[in-house]
Structure formats: structure tokens, C-alpha cells
Length: 162
Image (cartoon, rainbow, N blue to C red; front, side):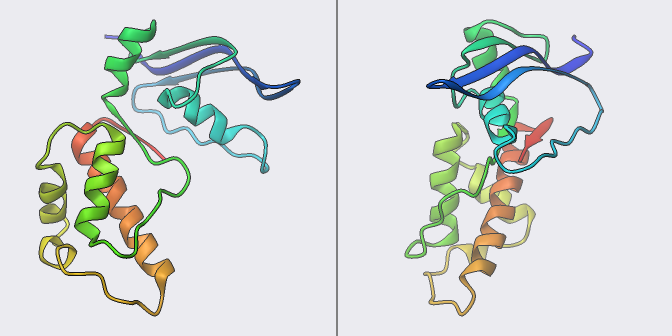
């Protein structure tokens, strides 16, 4: 078992003539807490998308849980949850239906994960109710984002990327 949860070696992502990410190397050991801080456009989201496999790199290598190579990385990525940026919320659907869409997008195979997550946080009954016009749509967005993060934690365990 690798002592590193994540290791990147000189990863870069280039769009046209400009680099969004250039020669970034990071080592995060098991149990470490690591934050990405930077100005807008510094490459934080690009870095997270590259680690999550949502974009391909121009150059460099990503290692997750000691695994490298595309097939091994695909298996290792099943151990992480990710909620990069704000996921789309569909106001005409129930919270449960919104979570089901996020479960499918995240590749969580357990069809009971949404129900079990809602049970754990005590919102199963509320989440199944038909959508209602809410005075504060941002409040709904925040609640659903928290539920999505809990769903990913429940389904994937060890690591949560936000």
C-alpha cells in the first residue's frame, strides 16, 4: 500500500498556446489535509479535473493510491468522490431525483446509495416530496450540494475532492 494518496509529477494542461496548468508536482500522504489556494484562473479547478480524470493532460503523470496508467487510475478513481464547482440542480425535480442524476454522473454503481445517504442524514421523506417554488433557490442549492457531497462520501469512502 502506497503512503501517498495522490502524487502528481510535472502535470501540465495547455489550451491552444496558453497553459492552464504548468509543471505542477504534488505529493499528499495518507491522513494529510491539503488545500488549493489561488486567484481565479490559477489552475485549481484544472488540477482537480485532471486528478479526477475529467480532462486529459498535455503532459505529466498522476498517481492515485499508488496506481498509475489509465486502467489502474480508472479503478483508483472509484475510491474518490468529486464535486468540482457547483453541480447543476434541476428545480423541477425532487431532491431525490437530483441526487440520482448526480449518482449516475459520478459513476456510483450502488443504486441504493441515494436512499441510504438520505436515510443517514435524516432527509429521506423530505427529499421525495415534489418540488415547491422556494423563496431562496440558493438555499436549495446549498442543501443539495451538501447532500451530493455526503452521497459521494458514502459511496466512495476514503477521499472527497471538492
